[in-house]
Length: 78
Image (cartoon, rainbow, N blue to C red; front, top):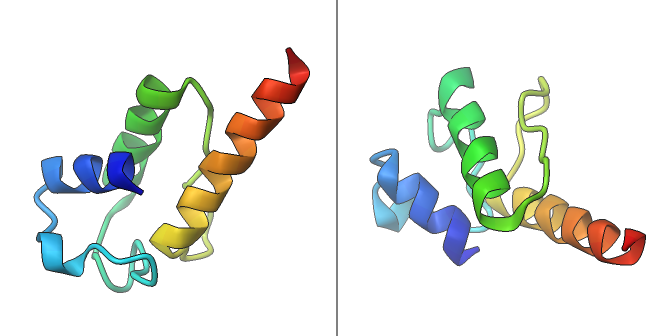
């Protein structure tokens, strides 16, 4: 969550709005370009691909879970 928080702060999201229950689009008002920026930031930090461009709005907790699953899948693949 800390890495995701850093990325969101860099995008100008106020710290008090960054919670695990916050929805990317509805609560944080992120557009498609910003969600791509988040995906790229997570790839740079963790070396995993996380697709956030789907039509379904996700919480920050969901994003963290996707990153954890991708890291675990990468670890088991090696």
